[in-house]
Amino acid sequence: MSEDISRNHDIEMNEEIHNRALFLIEDMCYLMCGSLLIRLGMPAPNREMNDAFSRELEREREYDHQELDLVVQTNVPLLNS
Image (tube, rainbow, N blue to C red):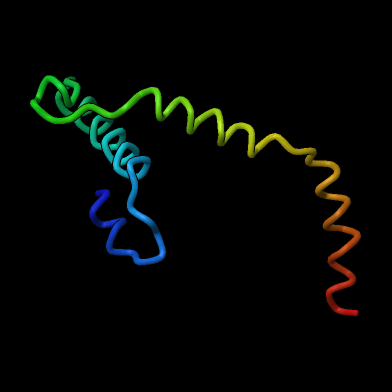
């Protein structure tokens, strides 16, 4: 999965992408056979990195929706002026 992402030249392959791919694979593996990757001899995803990513994503989503709506309503009519 992470190698497919690396074929897209606009995306930089890094440890975070590799870790995210491991999480997706582990989720599928757990659903299919009830086992974690480490038990199957594969590298396990870094859970601490995922927690840090989740906190960063949550911070990015913390914005005032009403204020953003007001900015959009005010500025969209100006686009066609």
